[in-house]
Length: 592
Image (cartoon, rainbow, N blue to C red; front, top):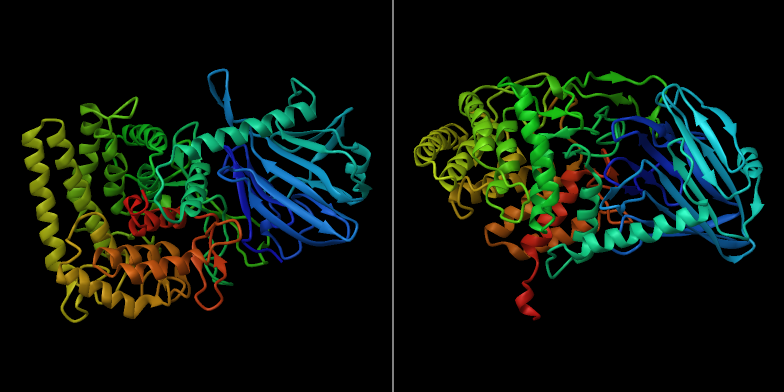
């Protein structure tokens, strides 16, 4: 049965997901939102194709881990006849003074003990699982041709055994390179070994430069690498997750395509990576963001784009895939591109603000960028008291959502700070006045005397975890009695142990049933800010225990079973791990 006990490999252009037995069950090409050439994850409970499996005969168990501080996965499979090791990665390293990141998967297989027998099952599909490829073979390669492109496997394994799916005794090391239909410059073993060594060296150097907290370093490194893997480096965009249509809870129908760049999620990712010193991602993203703003031409800014900035993400259902554990539908595209979500304006400004102040950047933001962001600020000011779909993307109703007004405030507040930094005193005063106007509006209209809390929308009566962002973005001091009271009310209404639901009002599919992971991290951040740090640490440890065996989190967690649900790996959730560790860790001063 499919689970989210998966690992991610990638190189910042594409990614693949690998299960505990080293089967590649999800991989989209030529980029994150492309056709899944391996889609077994969404082909029901017992898929027989659309995967790449190294099958050990008489399999009895496995161990799996990342090579420390890298995006390289090592899986050991055991049987009564012997054991084997499988190394999986996507090449990424510097070559000829530029980053080398081919759309290629590399698998290296070697015998560890005994006389193990293996079977190679390589069955890519095209057009979302509907089309099987035509197959042609060469002397040391096989071509798998679909409607739009051809995959080429180059290997030193027997092509007869591979194409016949014949079990054979593994004696020598075998290498598999699957990618574009191109001839290798060197032999397959030499190439695989070189790519392997250089990719490990790249990631270990990258990780070495991270500014880590004293505690939970492994969790922070794994989260940082995972966030990096969710960046599309050719443009600078950042996707929300690698998958589509993993349901938010069992049979819920809450199945969405998250392989796109939400301006909201991207801001949180950039800020988390900034906090550990990985600022290159911010620089790339700000370039993408400025292009997005410039191309928008002053119109309404939609909340989500494709990684190439395409704005048409028409949502449709794929008929040929039955879904995760047969829990369809499988959707591609996302209707959210049509939504009015006014928090997006604050997320744009917040995502770019550090670029105006950080002197480490090769291309820091300047006055021209500020002028572009002022257009965003004008939108924020104009719509701060208008109804929208909100950050949770409600499809059937609208309201003046507190979180949207809050982010409109953040846009004006940060523009005032940027203007002051750029020595624009008149503009600083103007944006500051607008921010104060929005702040007064929120304090007067989004507080409920009845609930003794900030509620989900103007004159609302329901609670929503997103108001905890008031503390995180500096809207209100954490010791303000209204913030403290709101936190307490939210815990009573939405917390289930360490987990936290998004909101209490029913949406298009009914009341939420599972914990939304980022909300739990917002809660522990608020607890720490209000002086309840020990409680926050206990919750943090409980949330870390919900990660899978490789340290990854999806979007949601079932409070009853601890099982992960929702698209995977979810950048929001991995952001929460970094933020929580930095907020709660003991200081380095305690040991040095």
